[in-house]
Length: 187
Image: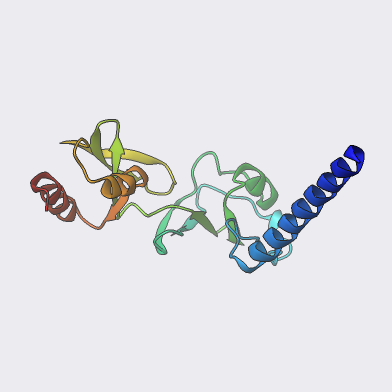
């Protein structure tokens, strides 16, 4: 009798685990992906572009996309020394996170995409026991402390503090200063 009870409990566990896996799959299937799968990219560069190489005179046109705010920037500059002499294939091997849109000896068009806010935004975050303002470096996803406030996190409402651990987004230092004043006065 005891043996049958263990077998029944085991079978119930197997059924529950299986049902959980199936329901989890069905729920997740309807949700957007955390990391979006890229469709096979169509070769954006003309055939034979590998015969061209980057020279001192090559102009680099760089488009940068920041996904969290959907802002874009553009810059154009002469090819850097480390780019000069590279063919398309060599360039793609060296700059693996850069998408090449056009490639010729005269100019190259490239695109970088970052999953962060652009440098135009300010993010107020908890930094130890104080609040600090963070910004993103142009052309990267690296964040740095732009300004350290003297506002301590002690006494800040728990919901606000939770938001500040992740970071609150602002468009200007004036907005941040108004927010900090509001925190200090307890409004």
